[in-house]
Structure formats: structure tokens, C-alpha cells
Length: 268
Image 1 (cartoon, rainbow, N blue to C red):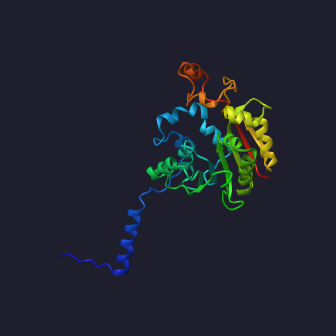
Image 2: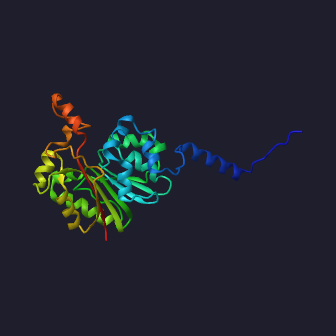
Image 3: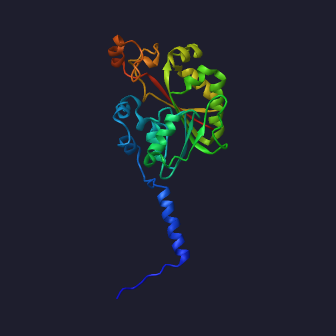
């Protein structure tokens, strides 16, 4: 004998609402992902993975002291090379905030195209120094990261770089970390010249400006150093851009990617 089941109207409405919510959000639930797993992820292209030998993402992020439960702000993510690693790593327990240019259409399209990887990013905020530098409520972040961006702000003006440092300082909690990776220039050069002509910043200048903003230098690493780089050429002539004449490409490939400083600062 068939038994007819009856679902009360309130329960039926709840089921329909749950089904609608499931249909509207197809982003898989976040799972625990180690840094090694994030770097090895199949969502990263072979081209991006090939640069790991120069960029050392696991070692760099471990040096900065990243933890899966942190609130992390990435400044000017560009094409999202590090976002591909940070997003899945922080998805389960932390928060990732992307401070990106309002004109970063390709970056935003990349996030929307892969919700499985990027769907758990907490938010994307407009960031266009010096006009837009507000990174969030004071004392709300554990870590601010910037990869190869500080020369761009210095090209605009030393005041623009100072504004970014101040915004980073303000948004961090006491004990919060500012992690910087940047193309390195020879020491004691004119910072505006090395930034503009070579897209490099000297390590002594970078440290002095961060300390001026109130940070304390916590540690310095040579993880991303390249002793083969003479530090007197525009970084875009080197891999991966190889923007110079074709007859110098072989020599630039032999040098490899630029020599980079990796600096860890703490807000007291």
C-alpha cells in the first residue's frame, strides 16, 4: 500500500528557499588548504608556476608569518599572481581583502570566472593612491602585503608612497605585519631616479620610509635575491617581460628575474 506523504506549507516554503539559495550560490564550501597545496593548485597556470623558482611563494609567505586565520590585505594585486595562492589558503578560516584599482577590470573578471578559488574573498576595495588609500577600519587587519608595487607609488611621488605606508599602518592591529617584496636598486641612489628609470627602490630607502611611518623592522630575507642581476637595468628588460630588443633576450634570460628585497615590518 502506498503511503502518501504530506509536507506542511511552512516546511515546504523552507525547502524551496534552501533550494533557491543553493542554486544562487554555487561556490563550493571552503576547505583547509596548506600553502604548499595552494601553490601546487591546478587553478594556477603553468606560466605562473614556472615563476615560483624566482618568486618563492611558500618561503616568502612563511617569512612574513602568514597564518590561515588572519585578515590579510593585498595591495594592488595586478594580475592576481599571489591572489591565486592567498585566496584558497585563507578561505576556510581567514579573510582576504583585495585593495585593487577601480579600473582593474581584468582582475575583477578573473575573480568572477573562478568562484571555486576566488569566491571566498571577503571583499575588493578601491585602491588608487594617492586619492584612494583607505584600507578599512583602524586596527582591523593582521597583515598587509605588497609585491613589487612600491616603486610605482614612489614614481608618482614620495608623498604617495608615504600615504600608502600610513594607510597600512592605520589599518593594522598592534603587532600587525607589513610584508614588502620589491625590485632592489643599488644602495644610496636617488630614489625617484631608480624608481622612474629602473622600477627599483633601494633597500635602505625602503626601510627608512617604513620606519618614518611608525613601523619597526622585524626581519630581512634574501629569499628573493638574485646575485646575477646587476641592479642597473630596467626590470622589464628581464624575464618575464623581456621588453628590450630581441638580441638581448638570451642574456636577460641567463640573468633571470630581478633581484628583490623581502622585508618584514611590525606595527608596535
